Image 1 (cartoon, one colour):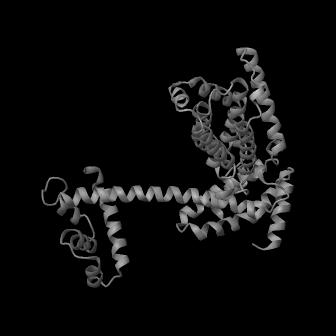
Image 2: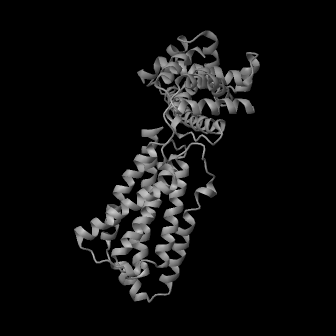
Image 3: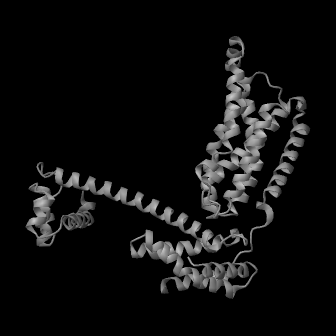
Amino acid sequence: MKLNNELLNKITNEGAKKALPSIFNLSTTLLLLIITYCVITSLLILSQGSPFMGQYFFTPDSLLMLITGILALIYACKLAFPDNNLKLHEKLIPFLPLSILLVYFINLTLSQNTNILVSCLKLNDFKCFFHMLKINLLPAVIGTFLLSRSFPTQHNWAGVHLILSISSFSYIILRLFEAPLNPLQMFIWHYIPVVLLLSIGIIIGNIIKRIGN
Amino acid sequence: MNHSKEDICNKLMIESQSGNNASYQKLFEVIAPIVSCIVGKKVFNETDQNDVTQTILMAVHNASHTYQQHKPFIKWLNAICSYKINDHLRHHYKRSELESTEEQDFQKNAFGAFNTENKIDIKRMLKSLPKEHATILRLLKIEGYSVKDISKAFHLSESSVKVRMHRIIKDLKDKFGSQK
C-alpha cells in the first residue's frame, strides 16, 4: 500500500465533504422546478403577450406528460446517488406514460379526416420546437449543475431522465399558450421534440461525468 | 464483507462527514485493502491494479458527500468500485483493440511486402532479433508453419508460442514501425 500513502495523506488533509443537502430530496427538487417554471411562464406572458389557453390544460396528454415528468424526476434524483443503481426495467418506467401518449396520439390521428392530416403535415410549426428549447434552457442548466454536484454512476441515464422530466414539464407549459390544432400537429411539433431532446440527455450525462466524477 | 467492518466504516464515514479528519484517515486505512481486494479480482495487471485502486480512492473522496448515513456503506463503496473498474476495463479493451488493429496493419505491411521487396528489408529485421525469435518469426510468418508445428519443434506450449510471436511483432513494431 506504499504507493497509496501519498494519495491517502492528500485526501485526508482535505477531509470529507459534508453530506449532500436536501436539494436532492424529491420534494425540494420538485419545488425548485415549479418555481423555475412559474418564473418562465410569467416571463412568457409578460414578454410575448401570448394568449393564455388555460382551458386546454387538463387534457389527457398534459396529464400523461405530468406523470412522465414526475416519474422521470424521481428517477433522476435516485440516480444522483452511486448506490442507487437501477435495473433496466426500473429505468424504463418513466417511458411508460410517454408510450401511452404515443398510442393515444396514434388513435386520435387515425380517427381524423385525411385532408386535415395532410394539412398538418404541410404545416411547418418550427416555432413550437424553438419555444420548447427556450423553456427547457434554464431548468436544464440548473438540473445539470445539481446533478454534477452529485455522483451518478449511470450518468447517461441520469441525463436522459433529467431532460425527459424537463421536456415533459415544458410540454405542459407550451400547451398553456397553444390551442391544439390537431392531434397530428401536437404529435409532430410537441411530442416528437420531447423525444428528440432526449438525445441531449446523453450529452448532459457525459458533461456530468466530466465535471462531477 | 463481514458485519463489523460495515458498522466500523459506517460510523467512521458519519464522523468524517461531520468534519472529523482523524476518522476520515482511519476510514481510508480500513477501505484501502478492501478496494485493492475488489480490484485484484477484476484487474490482473499489477500496475493497472494500483492505478485503479487510487482512482477509486479518489472517487470515494469526491463522492463522500453522496453517502447517505442511513444506508449501508459497503454497498455504496461497491457501487463506486464497480463503476470505476468498468470504466477502466472499457478503456483497456478499447486500447488493446486499437493496438491489435495497428499490429495487424504492421504485419500486413511488413510481410505482405516480402515478395515485392519494396518496403522493409526482412533480412535486416530478422538480424535485429535474438536467434530463437528470428527462427520463430521466419517459420511462422515466412515459411508458413503452424503454431502447433513450432510448439512441437521448440518444446513449448502453443500459447507460449503465440505470446512470443506477439512480443516479437511488438518489438519489430517499436524498431521499424517508424520507418514504414
